[in-house]
Length: 274
Image (cartoon, rainbow, N blue to C red; front, side):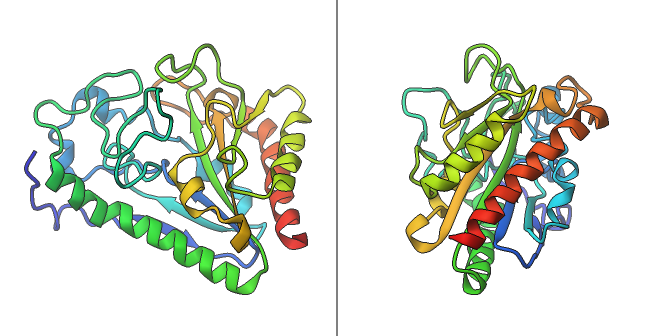
């Protein structure tokens, strides 16, 4: 796939950053829905629905700003480039199926491209335009917060359809906490968050189940250096309609938001006391 010059057509920045004052950074790498016009023309009808987006997380986590957290939000679709994959595109879950750094199919294995897939030059161009700036912003904001606080928590916010046979059997638990099997944060933080999730009446939870944390959690978490990274992958059915057009469900969201806020508060409490 040859890269087209879309410098005039694609004016969207790669991320939005709202800087807070407390030792908590909320990252949302898969909420973006922007697709550059030059890329959109080559996508299939299935791809243009952007079904695998982490829909509405900014709305669901609207309380994070009032808590004093920094919030980093990707603008471009994960179909452009997946910000939570390693830059060399190796599989974080050996032996299990996963999508690529520049995906070529949907979670349902439907092709994204009507014709040619992105070649190595195109992947490098997307990394330079979108991936590197996002991870650079992550590093810079963590460094800024770390300069002001002894410990900082990086909260990587995700959501996914509750049933995706390609990746897991049956229905996914509602709250899927991942800490890279304990490598990305202090075990006391993981235990505290796991208790809060387990105490959420009417919801199911697991720690380091199918989703143990992606590249962001693993690359930026450094407990010994005062940066504790946690990924939360939520089942989308607990706050939205999972079928197109993927509407936000305000009633369901209102029920789950107190539990999300309790987990973020637990993360803040840990960062302050660590």
